Every structure is written in C-alpha cells, then in structure tokens.
Length: 287
Ligand code: RET
Image (cartoon, rainbow, N blue to C red):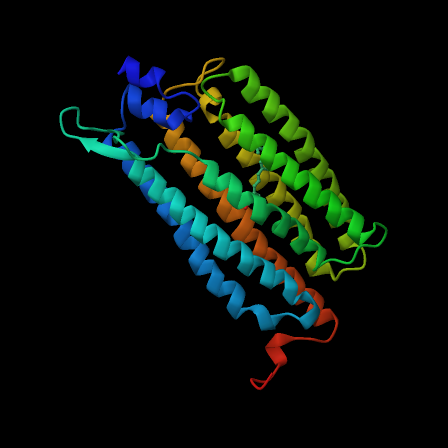
C-alpha cells in the first residue's frame, strides 16, 4: 500500500484516500449519488430555461440562452466527472472497501475546472444582459469578468495538482487565484448596485438576493479546494469524510451558482419586462 501511495505523485487526495484506507460502501455510494444528482439537475434545469425563454421581453432572452449554454456544458462535464469517479474505483471483496482500480484513470477534479472555464464567463456575462449599467462601461466590465474569471480558474487548476505533494505550491497558487476572485466580487457588487438603480421594486429585491446567493455559492468553491486541509490542518487529511464533503460542496455550489442564479435572473427579467409593458401572463398563445 505504501508503495502505491508513493507512486501516486500529483494525484488529488481522493486517490490517496482510496490507496490508504479505501472507501466504505457509504462513502463511495454517497459520492457516486451526489455526482449523479449534479448532472441530473442540469438536464432538468435546461428544460426550465428553454421553456421560460418567452416569458421575458426579447432583449432579456440572451440571459436564458446563456443559462442553456451553461446547462449543456455542465451536464456533459458533470456526467464525465461522475464516470471518472466510478471508473477509478473498484470494489475489493477482501477488505470490503472501494479501492483504486488497476490500469484505469485516477480520479481528478480537473473536469470541473475546465467546465468552469466555459461557465464562469457565461454566468458573469449573463447578468449584464439583464441589468442596465448606469455608470460603468459595459465592455470594460465584461473584459474584467472574462480576464479575472479565466485567470482565477487556470491558477486554481494548477494549484489543485499539488494538494498532497506540495502544500506550499497549493497555497501559493490558491492565493493568486483568490486575488482574481476578489476582483470578480468587486465587479459584481458594482454591477448589482448600479443595476438596482431605476429597477422596479420587486426586481431590486431579486437583485439583492442574487448578490447574497452569489457570495455564498462562489465561496463554496475555494472551500472545496481547501477541503483536505479543513479536515487536516497543516497536512492534507486522508479522510473519506473530507472526500464526500468535497463532492457535496461542489454539487451544492453548482446547483446554486448556475441553476438558482439563472432562475433568479429569469424572475428579475420578468419583472423588468412587465414594467416595460411585456407581461407574459397577459400574452395570448399566438406570441
Ligand atoms: C479556486 C482555487 C482556490 C481559490 C479560489 C478558487 C475559486 C473558484 C471559484 C469558482 C467558481 C466556479 C463557478 C462555476 C460555475 O459553473 C479556483 C477553487 C478563490 C469561485 C461559479
């Protein structure tokens, strides 16, 4: 077993736990189930965004289109992520544990990071198609979102390879990523504050909720990145609880930051559409 551990190199801590103690039935299955729940929700929500497209005035529909793009990409990548989990582990009857299978892929969260490369810019652009900026320049905010979003993910993607082998590199890359994250939070706060000005009262309330949801759901990602250390202190914890906690955290974060966020933007756009004379509840079926 120790020899196996020493040959794991830059593999993420999930593999080290598999090689060290293996996973109990409960830890393995809960992980598989929560990963499955993740992609199933994306497919279901895809239908919501397609079917509600016409409940908002045409100029807001790009927001729904972006949600559709996010759902398709998240569905596919989360499906692959789930298969990566079940493909990497095998059941070992001798120890009654799930351990690393031989010859297959190891487990890696990288699919998620690559998914974010598509979804993070889309989610950030999305709100720009719903709100009207009163002071800031649309293209400079858009470029800031794109630049910092991409830089945050690429630096975090590099850092996650070192979560077991080099805590120093893991924290340095994580820190650089966090600087870009703060820039995104700053820009988003600005967009929401300006967006509230002149918006109907109910839309303002939704925008307030979107900011709270944004803070909560986006903070979960660095929490999941840190998970082996949240359970282990200065050393990464080889704990199956930490593995399951990471899968659950990512899934809650994905559902909140993509699906609930998209629904709240749809509701905001519906209110704004109504205020501009486009009330879907009063339209006839021909439209
Ligand atoms: C990383 C690395 C550690 C430091 C920070 C991170 C932030 C990640 C975030 C990801 C958001 C992803 C979303 C995906 C939706 O599809 C990269 C984990 C700060 C905020 C919203």
